[in-house]
Every structure is written in structure tokens, then in C-alpha cells.
Image 1 (cartoon, rainbow, N blue to C red):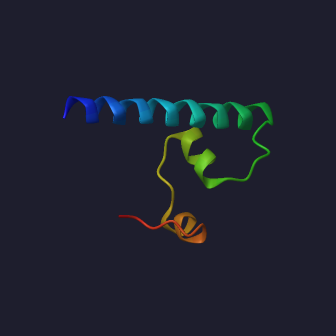
Image 2 (cartoon, helix red, strand yellow):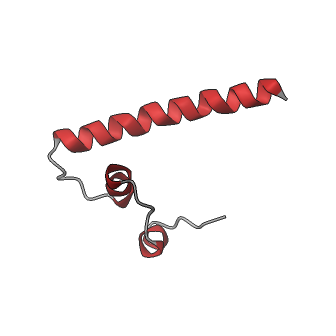
Image 3 (spheres, one colour):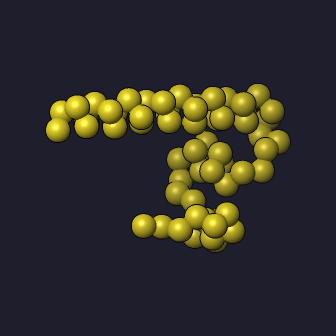
Length: 60
């Protein structure tokens, strides 16, 4: 069980690093990237249901 938790933590750390790079890239382009995911990460809000639907993402 502890091994599973550590693996999940490592996965989350990798995801955080990638998302951080995306946010930095967006800031470097002065926000000239149209992406609901990046926008939500920048202002800390959740994606709107319409934005999720437009990208084919469904909620669990």
C-alpha cells in the first residue's frame, strides 16, 4: 500500500512539473494562448462545464 502511495505521489509530482512549465510558457507569451486549462490554472478557478464539454472531457 505504501508503495502505491509513493508511486501516485511521484506521478503527481511529474504532472505538477509539466503543468508548471505550461503556465510559465503562457506567462512568457503574455497570455496569448487561448486555453481554458491554462486560464483556470492561472486564476485558480475550476473549468466551466461548457469548456470541458467543448474539449470532449467528461467528469467522473
